Amino acid sequence: MNTEPVAVSLLGVSKTYRSGGAEQVVLSDVDLTIGRGQFVVILGRSGSGKSTLLNLLGAMDRPTAGRISVNGTDIGALRERERTKFRRVSLGFIFQAYNLVPTLSVLENVQLPLALNRIDDDASALRLLEELALGDKAEAWPEDLSGGEQQRAAIARALVHRPELILADEPTGNLDVDTGRGIIRLLDDLVRRNGQTLIMVTHSQEVIGYADRVLTISDRKLFDV
Ligand SMILES: Nc1ncnc2c1ncn2[C@@H]1O[C@H](COP(=O)(O)OP(=O)(O)OP(=O)(O)O)[C@@H](O)[C@H]1O
Ligand SMILES: [Mg+2]
Image 1 (cartoon, helix red, strand yellow):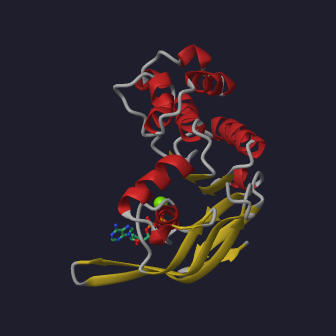
Image 2 (image 1 turned 90 degrees about the vertical axis):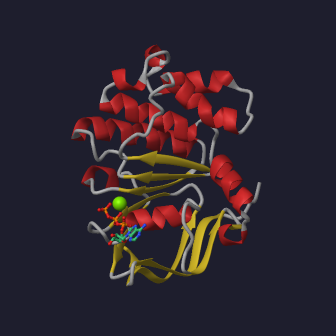
């Protein structure tokens, strides 16, 4: 593993969307460094480019200009196959809408990243579910879980293969304040224990209290708050 203490670096990163004849510059010449093991919150009004930034960091999309490195890897230089592998091995994603696979049990959902990475450690999925107080729901279908339970299952799925970087887009957006707070506390505890980097888009003032660093996107740039 790379010992470089930088988790994420952006150098001169711009993102312009072109649809039809129209162009929209969402990020313009952004420079940013995020240290390993940090919990970073991204704020910004709707449409400011928060999800765009996460998509770039997660190699789901490519910048129009500039360079993005994650744990020492220049992700723009990766071929498509390597990008897929990078996403599968090094990243965990948590979404507002949970995105559990409805035809798989909770445990099977959590085992997915292990299977994709050919990691033979079925016990770790169940252990993680137990840590997230979902041990008794392992055999349940996702649709039979409450929203908070589904999000905890999604968190287990994002963490089970021990990715170096976890990207979360409004993970508590569909939950009440108390449930959201409990989930963030669990997530914060897990990622700190494992030295993982967590970058989270949120509107929640509650969540900001847990962060090491708060950034905001405004006028196509990123600023420390
Ligand atoms: N695939 C795309 N094609 C064209 N325009 C896009 C695309 N994705 C996002 N945009 C535009 O880029 C801007 C930023 O979108 P983005 O989804 O990053 O905002 P956001 O900060 O995540 O907003 P929200 O808080 O509402 O989720 C918006 O104006 C959006 O319409
Ligand atoms: Mg968004």
